[in-house]
Length: 184
Image 1 (cartoon, rainbow, N blue to C red):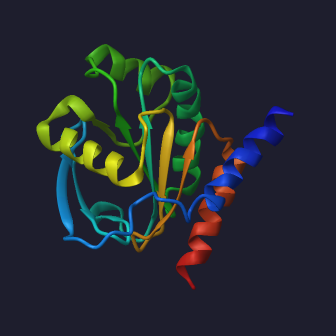
Image 2 (image 1 turned 45 degrees about the vertical axis):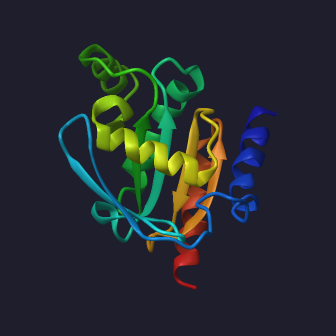
């Protein structure tokens, strides 16, 4: 029953793609440089079409908004890590921590105990990180509920979002569908 519900929830990813996610308003392209907790820089270009990450070109981009105190977020980390490991040639997950600052102990827990092995952007890590999360949150209509994921095709096109947990198989199927959209 739970698996069925998770699958149903993940399928809503494609049903809500027409909603206000990255708003289709005309306006200038915004560029952001954010820095991960490991000092790795990511360059994002946000337009009315979606989001392009220079470092993720050619891959489906999943932006995962999470918090260290959020049980569903913590439960999602091993699933996302497995997806990243199994489909790393097709997908790049970037997590955005949106609660109070991460401590070194938090990182040990997230990486060691939960297996988080994709980039972490701490929203409170810098003013630029904060500005990006605020901007993308506002543009996508995010209401601060976590976990929250945004999905972008390899060309940067916004293709959907998802609130809550999702299972590995549904994520894999979603990535495959997004990759198929790319060829159209």
